[in-house]
Amino acid sequence: MSLVLHDLLACCRGLENDKATERKKETERFRRLIRSKEVIQELDRTSGAKAKGSGQLTWDAVFRFLQRFVQKETESMQSSKSNVTATTMATRQKKMAETCSLVKFFIRYANKRKGKVRI
Image (cartoon, rainbow, N blue to C red):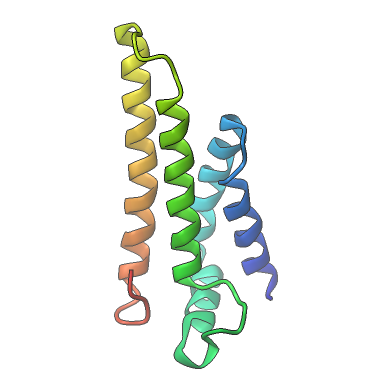
């Protein structure tokens, strides 16, 4: 596995961290990595038809990491108290919007791959 994909894999695993602050740091790192031309090229290469099943990190695998991240964030919010102040509710809504924004960000980049990726 290339170094850039190894960094992306470590970042994706960080998105599953139990600590919310660590997950937040990893979301910023994730955005930076996905913007990288080298990461995009490597994901395209490993996601190609010939590379399927090689145990490499692919666009689909990264998307599955994001799905688990969204699930973890949702569970975190659901386990919180239900009767809270308006400020707390606004904070939760902002957090959910940031989570959705990350997924939309990834999907936009993946969709730019023109047929190389199906998400």
